[in-house]
Image 1 (tube, rainbow, N blue to C red):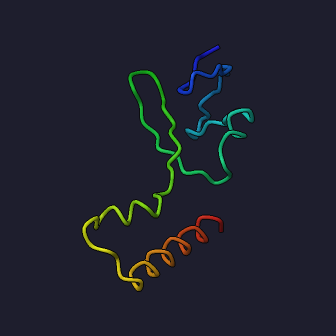
Image 2: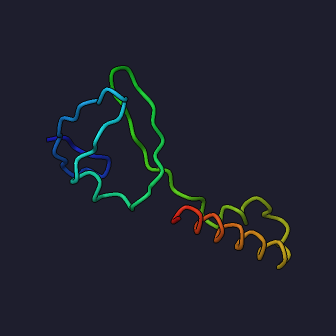
Length: 91
């Protein structure tokens, strides 16, 4: 057993790196992530780390211009771009 970030216990399972370099994640791990999640991958010594990338929140766009209110046209353009990106991820 391993203690996770939130203090929860997690079961450790062994996986193999296939000849093509791919790994098959256990179903118990896959259930914890939305389908088609994007993951960042890096190594720390002999450890491979996978971290789910979360899309930027719309409030992050507003934080770019704290002193000045965004014009409605710019807000609309940001929302439309976000929706378009979300639709292309689902495809």
